Length: 141
Length: 315
Image (tube, rainbow over all chains, first blue to last red; front, side, top):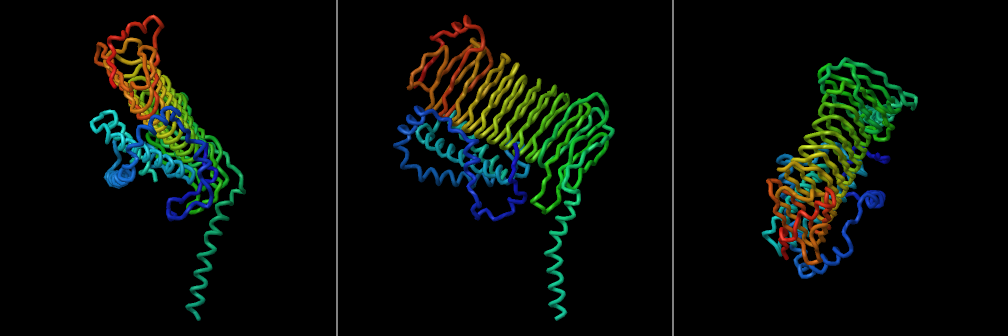
């Protein structure tokens, strides 16, 4: 497996510029939806009352992201992905960005669930793991 | 006028330099060049090898010597070999500042089995076979495949798949979107992924931390009596094979997923199981929305050892 269209030095380009082509088809083939339809339906029903808090949760997640970025600058977390130091090509960078989006979304869902069950150790443990993954992925970019 | 001429000349040289450099780098006639290098190498030396694209293949042999064969890509600047017989570094160098290059290089190394290996690819696959010393192998978009007798293995990739087969007692594997397969390990295993799947098979684990965000986790492993086993996922599915009589506590919890087990009857409203067996071991299986499936590891007759009265159901 390789980056056929790899562009070295991409990380030096301005990130505000949109890519010249659609990167999603390549990413989509690697990302598989894993939630069963019944679980998704049940989760949707469960979360409906909490949707009004989504905006606030997004804000919390944004602050958390800034916090993890700050931690990232202080050093790698225990268990951080070892591959964080390797240079990324454009395809790999797009994959990392897409996965970061998955992780951020997961973190938002966990924070919503924690509002219902603030003392749930499994949820707190999952949140901690998710924050570690987000930190690892941001360190790669 | 003189200033204008000097300025124009400087500009002209500056603009022409990259083009000249590009032509110089292509003086290899656009063809791959064979590699044939030998260096003395101690049996316990440290070997670091880095390739940008193509392949890194490392195999053990019975000589106290390093052999490098393969092919350099047409635009590769050089194969840099530095260090001593105790610690050596092999690196494929591409021309700096030139992004449109064909650097696809095949590196085939043969090394003493006991060396400590660090292999690093960018879009290169990494394959390691037969070593007994510690192995670290990573790639960004390449696949990583390790089949060794080492007791310490670390392997990772961003988007490539990772496969480890080793009797390793200290194993770390990770990926972002690539699938991870582990076989034959024992002792401590730590496996992490975001959207890839973890397929973990172990002889006997004392400690496991398996984590994913949306990837599935499959675990089939023997466990020590005091094993500390943890599998966590957000939306992936967890499928774990447990002994029929777990030695210690078992905690299975999901927020909105489903739990199925050959021992415990379940319905949609039950999201947590607790079993307290005799022993210091601990098994924790957690998911947020992913389903958790438990299978028994031993023969059919043993599954009755876990009696319904031992199981406390919540929610």
